Amino acid sequence: MKSRAAVALAAGKPLEILEVDLDGPRSGEVLVEIKATGICHTDEFTRSGADPEGLFPAILGHEGAGVVVDVGPGVTSVVKGDHVIPLYTPECRQCPSCLSRKTNLCTAIRSTQGQGVMPDGSSRFSIGGEKIHHYMGCSTFSNFTVLPEIAVAKVDPEAPFDKICYIGCGVTTGIGAVINTAKVETGATAVVFGLGGIGLNVIQGLRLAGADMIIGVDLNDDKKAWGERFGMTHFVNPKEVGGDIVPYLVDMTRRGADQIGGADYTFDCTGNVKVMRQALECAHRGWGQSIVIGVAGSGQEISTRPFQLVTGRTWKGTAFGGARGRTDVPKIVDWYMAGKIEIDPMITHTLSLDEINMGFDLMHAGTSIRSVVVY
Image (cartoon, rainbow, N blue to C red; front, side, top):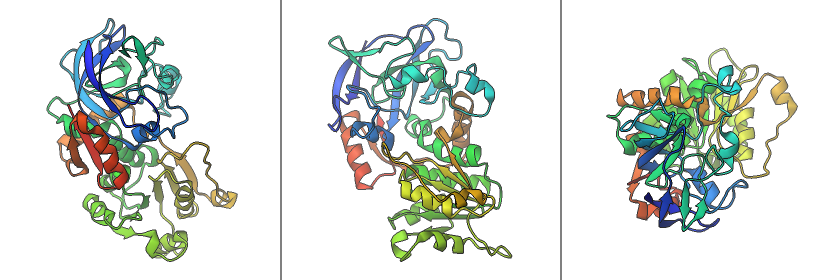
């Protein structure tokens, strides 16, 4: 069949809108009509050429929502007509990682996913017989895409595609980092570095968990109002501190008889290794946890004095917010439908597929929280 898609033909080049050939689903696979897809910083990381594992030509996109239009042999968990969210972190429920219940990082199709192909080693996308790579196992920048059955989450059919597509990455990553990874408790203090799409979802995750003091840190004063909208209680612009931000934040978090200071939980949503260190070092001595969410550039490393860890701080990383895709994503959609979390205000721009490159421009300009392409 034919599908319209935004194709990354080469690193650093704008995406090109082309008609591509798409083979139907094989055993254990599903064909999904993508109705809406978000434009994420991770897509830009690969498109720009900064991703050392980036493959071209490829159809990017990993934050989508759509409808199952066909299934291959052996598929039992979804049927034609089901509404689904593609999962770049699948959940097979059978591999050692899934069975451990200690991680959400399913390994069932990891090797082929990283090679830009389906689990059988081939691609479903092509142009004139030439292979086009899949991306993160999703390729939601195509109106139609094929995914493994274990990489789709069946969701409420009443939920709007142009909002819940954001749950495919940004919403789940931010809220999940709070709920699943940090396991924030009621009354906690927290600092969130970077108030973009992920950071705002961390903030609303903290609000959902009942955190008492939520400090947002960003270089852009315009983010203050955004943070407050989702539950932030205090805002800090590092440029206005006039010195090392770590002691400043430690002092802000001194409460009652606790004269040591430091946040119970800190979250880096910037991908900046210097900020990651600051986030760890403003966590509370003895029990503070610092969660790394942002993805740093190739070859970059984080560092701190061992003293920071010896005195009881913990550094943690999280992918997809620690969420088990097929199990947890439908629950987050239900939270949205019940009004427990907000998504609509974060969808600041709605675009057509032909306008997709504008979405990357808006991202670079800092004028969008999330741009969504509607097919």
